[in-house]
Amino acid sequence: MKTIIIEDKERVEEIIARCDICYVGITDLEGNPYVIPMNFGYQDGVIYLHSGSAGSCLDMLAQNNRVCITFSIDHELIFQHPKVACSYRMKAKSVICRGQVDFLEDIEEKRQALDIIMHHYIDREFIYSDPAVKNVKVWEVPIGNVTAKEYAVPHI
Image (cartoon, rainbow, N blue to C red; front, top):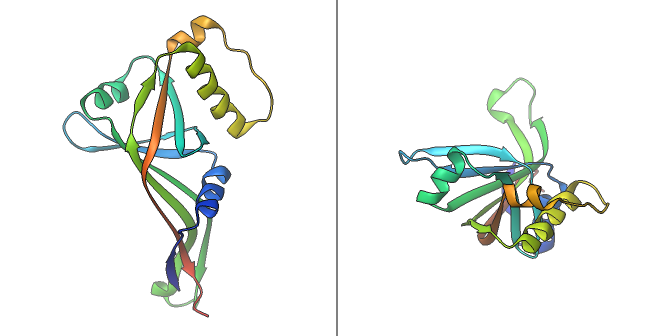
């Protein structure tokens, strides 16, 4: 079984579109990795996330706004021989994106980003009250670097 690199943008975006959560890697205040699952939206090379208006993640991002975001789908345990442990492998497809978080402050830009997030999960229109939009932190991450792979592809 082999690993192949996915270079086609449409295949990368299809993997992202099929995910229901992503994992966001941040550097904590001591310089250690800190990874959290988050819901998200994606449009035109930008990942949108949201959080409360205060908290440890925001403290970390104030110190270092670089993030690594991972998406993964189609997990399946496969093997070449059922009695040979080293022949087992997890079949999957993944996308890893790196970028820097910017926080949206404009209320209309925040509404648009929240719509992108919500449309990832459900196709309908939403209304957001001004206090709710003002109190949510909306993260905008233009993707700077992308790698995508498919694991456990059979040799042909």
